[in-house]
Structures are given as structure tokens and as C-alpha cells.
Amino acid sequence: SSPSTSSTQNTATQCPGLCRAPAGYQVAVSGANLEPCPANHYNDGSAKGCTPCPAGTLTNEPGLTAVASCACRAGYHRLAGVCTACELGTYKAEPEDRFNSLPCTPCPPFETTLQTARANASDCVCWPGYERVDGDCQLTACAAGSALVFTANAASCQCAAGFEFQSTLA
Image (cartoon, rainbow, N blue to C red; front, side, top):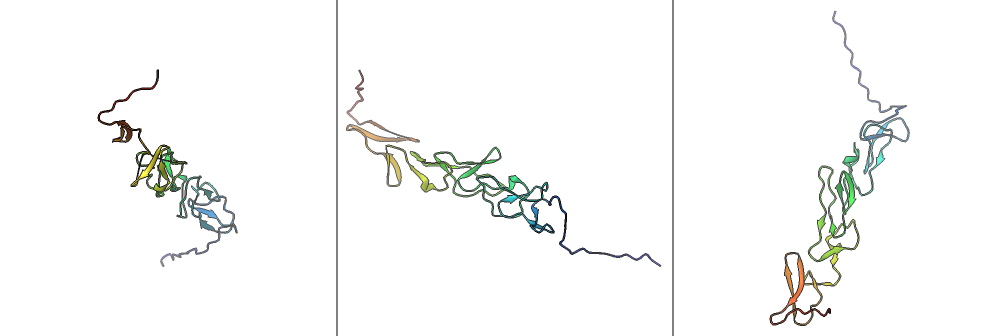
């Protein structure tokens, strides 16, 4: 006679008395079963409940297992592991995914933003003393006898041919 083997498969979802949940899950309000962490929340397996992702994040994926999985939302970039607002003069239109951090995009020449954490190229405005002409920011006006000259990322009024700069300072 051969030994009989019996196989038991547990299909119950009841887990009463849990003091912590596996990574990516939390103990349900009933306390009797588990459920995935909601979107923009995580559990690394050390707690019963899920923790909200930090400010500056927006992750639509449920069941995150670490704070590093919380992706930075548009207008924020990851700096030393923390989602940080894009600086003045920059923007970031797309949220990052949790696998790579996208840098903030600088505004075009002679443009800046009025606030940090900007998410759209349209948040870039001309510097004071500049105005948008044919889509680009240009100095509003140069004095008589001078002309607007663009070089690399700078614009200045320079003397036109036949004119020279004279200081009015004594």
C-alpha cells in the first residue's frame, strides 16, 4: 500500500488579526482581508496601511511598494530622491514614470516663469523690458542710433553704423 497524499488548497481571503500587510497592500477596513494600496499610496511591507506619496507626486498606479515608486507629477522633477518644484524659468509638461526622472525644460531665451512648479510651455513669459514679436521675446525698443542685436542667448542694443556710445556720467 502506498501512502496517500492529500492536497489542500486554501481559497479563503480571510486573514484576521494581521499586524502588517505585504508590500503594495493594506489591511482592508474590515480587518479581515487585504486590498492593493490605492493610487498614489505605497506600503513597503512594514505597516498595516498604505502611506500617501509625498507632495509633488501623482501616481495613478495602485499597489506601489516603495516611496521611490511615487512618480513626480508635471511641474516637478526628482532631486536627490525627492520630487522638487521646477525652478523659475523652467517647466515640465509631462509627469515622470517611476523608472526615470525627467528634468525640467528651460524656457526659451529671454523668457521666465512667474512661479515655480510650472507644467506648461505657455507658463513662460517674456522678461521685463521684452515683448513677444512673431513668437519670440525681443527688447521692446532701442534708443535712436542703436539697433537690436542677438548673439547666442543674449540680446542688446548696439550702436548703428556711424554712431558711438557716449556716457552721460560725469
